[in-house]
Length: 268
Image (tube, rainbow, N blue to C red; front, side):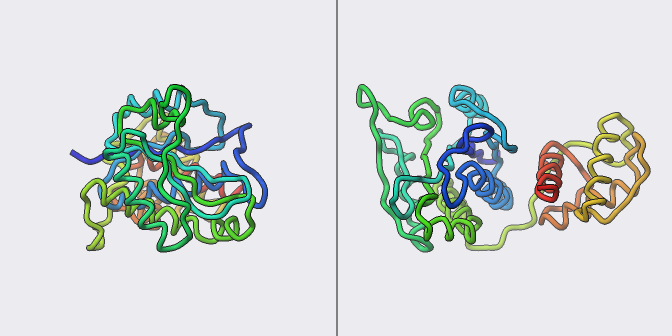
């Protein structure tokens, strides 16, 4: 059975998080997407708390996480307050949470300064952060640098994918998954729309693919109907290849989420 990681994406929607040289909610989502892509290449399943710029609340985030029942939890944030460098918070009980924090910190220190591995306590000497206190799986909260320190913000803008890679290496080490060898191309979706399907959902998929073609994301056209034919297959496999996945001709939930994100990035 595949290992599972829940990726909390800080803030969102009307809650921008910390703001100055960059906006926290934007780079939390960018980093989360980059992290999820790396984990998937090593066969790790994942769930993001949000995939769009929408309002979220901590209660629903924790409930989503516990329902997913992951092996590990990471919550992605960026800091503010005039400091500098990365820091990571783990559970006061230690255990795998502390191991995960140390493994991630070791990797991040290779690319930016670190303020260390820490705990933060609230009332009653419980963990301050709900994502650590209320989730069933071992969890950490990541603060990937300061948005109000220009040197940190500039680093984040240029290197958030490297930061995601450092997070991924720490996660994979904690899960016991080796990164020594290059992974085989992963499968994005094992189930979903495929050739010969004829549904209203296929029509919606094709409308997205045609929009993507107009924006230069996809180079294949197709008829606008409910049938998943050769044109749709070519478009799906083309995008899977561009994204680094096996070209299995299946457009499932992850494919559609990724395509939505590609379109949104183009129209911004």
